[in-house]
Image (cartoon, rainbow, N blue to C red; front, side):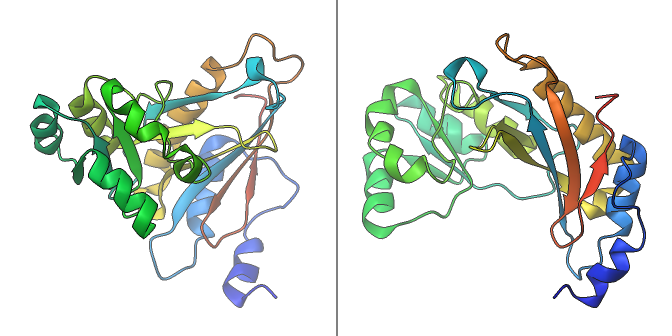
Length: 228
């Protein structure tokens, strides 16, 4: 059963209608009834087949207004980069000791992993545990880089990674309800711009199949894909 708040929220909009961006963002803020500051997520279904390597869609973009979430970073690096990463605001910086902590203690007190290329020997062994959680650093997302300080700063500023799941959908946070429609629209436009730019050459037919925006506890608002 859906709660009363959810039912009230559903009355505020038409389920089958596709809204333009500004309307959708206003609605998603209106339909958020939870007592906490809900996260707004966008769900984009793409006309590609993620089983094919040449139809992968993955990358990262810095949202103009950030995500509203305090992001904890773990950096695998050594030498001069250790201090640079700490100065940039990294929460944890080190090498094999953190790899061991993850493996032995099932420790996951971080949201993003950044690694310098010289540490991929250590990080590579964590693929089985970091991969399924979407935490494996990658050059495409800018999280495997010699400039770990820059990567940490970008993550802290609101850089989000987007990637296709097995059902060809990208799920991505674009902020909090408290941002208001205007800032959410700016963030939404940034992520959609990046996804459109990342269209694989092998993709045929309609690229953006559908787009839904929703708050953590609220209903999904369908968006018009014609203008995206």
